[in-house]
Length: 276
Ligand SMILES: C[S@@+](CC[C@H](N)C(=O)[O-])C[C@H]1O[C@@H](n2cnc3c(N)ncnc32)[C@H](O)[C@@H]1O
Image (tube, rainbow, N blue to C red; front, top):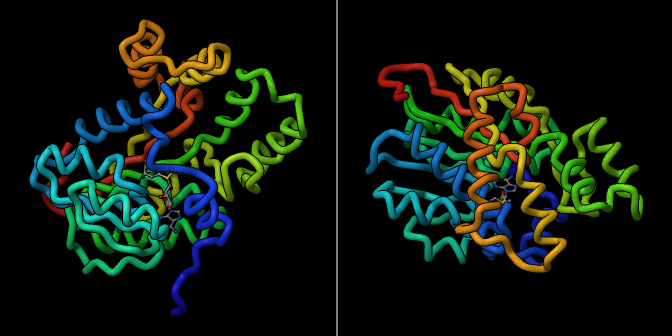
């Protein structure tokens, strides 16, 4: 079988055009994504020192706190710059592709896919990623897969007052219809319907699938406030506390999952010792 190739457009975006290392700290929406992802993972992960394979882990935003919590983290990413940066996050690192992992069968307790699935517009590629996650996680182990929610760009552009400008309405219409983002905003990507992501995880054989909205319904409020003032909304502000409370409250209402920019689908590999 030939080795899969990550799209040049995606490699160029992360290598030269965008600083992923700064993303989760340089805006309130990024901080909200980090805080919520961390609290959802902490709720579902087995106790440290379980082994976590962070596939598409980028520069190590999650690997860093996971290692700090005592997990044994191995990070895989196809972008050399990310792998170099992640080497300082307290984990081991490897240049690689989610569709062809080098890890042995049943060799880790948890597989994180917080990135690869939304950079693979072809369903067959996403199936290959999930099949690899199923192969390398141990029976009873956990997979956590992130998707960008289909309506995220619509909410963002509209709340920033620019949806009707510069062809965004037409491009957003295409994303809404097909899920495929061709790269003028962000890069080559696939935006999932939330239930579609859960179905892909189930389709790979994972059991007990659960779906979470990450940021909740108010991250566009944070983005709009930053656009209006030119200043980052602090994590210690009432506006941030309110957005975080909204995300937590929305969790109990599955219909509201479409209000989040990112969604997480969790499932366990059938076998003994599934954890909560
Ligand atoms: C937006 S970043 C997310 C980084 C980190 N996981 C996080 O949640 O903050 C998406 C990541 O997916 C990685 N990625 C893209 N295609 C991939 C593939 N085929 N296999 C593994 N990782 C991939 C990118 O290099 C990038 O680091």
